[in-house]
Length: 179
Image 1 (cartoon, rainbow, N blue to C red):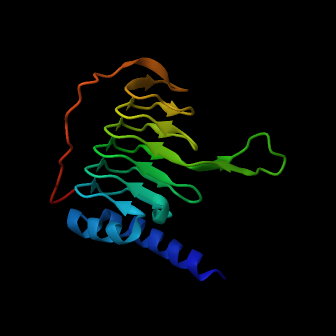
Image 2: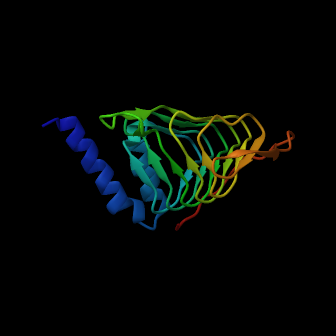
Image 3: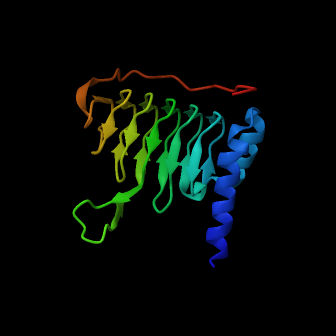
C-alpha cells in the first residue's frame, strides 16, 4: 500500500469530516495552512468546504471561499489569484472522464483563476479551464471553456453575457470568528 496515498486520504477525510465543520475559523485556517499547497494571507475558508488532495490547491491572498465549496485537486492543480470570491457550494473540478473512451479513461487539467474573479453560488468550473482577471461567473453557470479577463459569463454551458467594470480597486477582507 502506498503510504503517501493513505496519509493524504486520512488528512482529507479528517478535514472534511471534522475540522472542516469546526465552527472556529482560526482552527480551520491553521490546518489548511499546513495541508494546502498554498493558503495566501487574509484568505478565509468557511465551514463545510471539501478539498480532494489539498496539496494541489493553491489559494492566493485575500480569497473568500464560502461554505460548501468543493476543490478537486486529485491529479491536477487549482490556482487562484488574489481577491477571489467563490460563492457557496461552487465546485472546481480538475479531473473527469472522456465520454468517448472505450475504457472510461481519465481526462483533466489544471484550473487557473485570475485576480479579482467572482464565482457565484453553485457555479461549476470544469477541468482545464482558465478564468481571466476580474471575470464573473454567474450563479449556476457551467464553465467548460476559458473565460477572458473582465468577461461575465452565465448559463449551461456558460457563455459571455457582458463585461465587468475595468476600474476595480477592492481588496477582500473577511475574518469571521465563527463560520
